Image 1 (tube, rainbow, N blue to C red):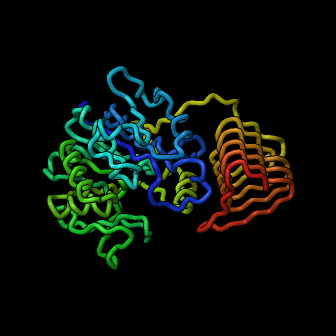
Image 2: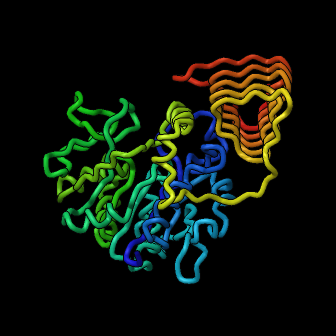
Image 3: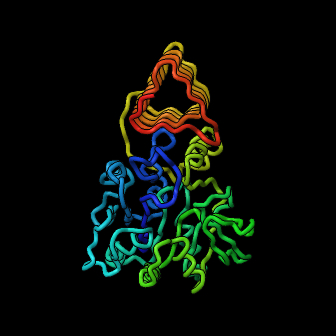
Length: 375
């Protein structure tokens, strides 16, 4: 799909992931045993034939750069296209007249990349957040957008929860937006939530960015979308398959636990639309004589000698004899030592839980342990 440019917002705006995003953005957070969250949007674009992608960054992006690398694992290491990393201040005021200074939000970030938008003469642009877990057929979204004649098309899902970070949408019978609200579903009248994926023409995006910057608008959902709704037509594309926008720790925990359900995994990981990630070669996982494992997702390179149930283990995790891990997410390099007991706990990378320690959270509020901590 040579006429479409992808723009991924790969920096944090509004979320509550606490310790998990202390050292990285949401898109760079490990997920599902072997992936990073940004893998979903990169894969969605590649699977839809979008091979020109800009990744907008702001801060804490070293982990993201290390993960993407030259993007060959997504077939985006190409001569005339591929991934362009767009850190802050990549474009000076001379190169981009819309740059006003430090990024205050998505509008400033997109305006700072207006030179990139102008040089890539695509007909359409897909602007997407990098915190989405979903296998979305973007090619179908683009086709629907073109046929609808709308100025902007936003991908929507059924409202799943009330959250101050969620953008709620009210659609009419023609699947056109009639109301867009952030953090307020208007007493249930807005029955859908924006997933964070928007399709529009490139010229329309550049025009709207100029208009928003001129009027000192900085919030994409509150101001950009509202102006689009007032001045034109905003269409809604209903995506009814599994989709989670990672806005808080509960979203992260729930989306990982959901993957223990085979039906959900099959809905997200499709053979015809694979979710790609950076390849790392590891030895197979070792299971000791006393290992007791039930209903888990376990990556390569682990050593398990204790009990693990209903959990997600990333690469190079060690569960020693006598240790019990139940309904937990143990990220790469985790060490759960002898007789330790964990329930509803998320450990970031390289966390060590000492002998005999007991930690218990709740499925609605799991305990989160920061990177490199020893407990």
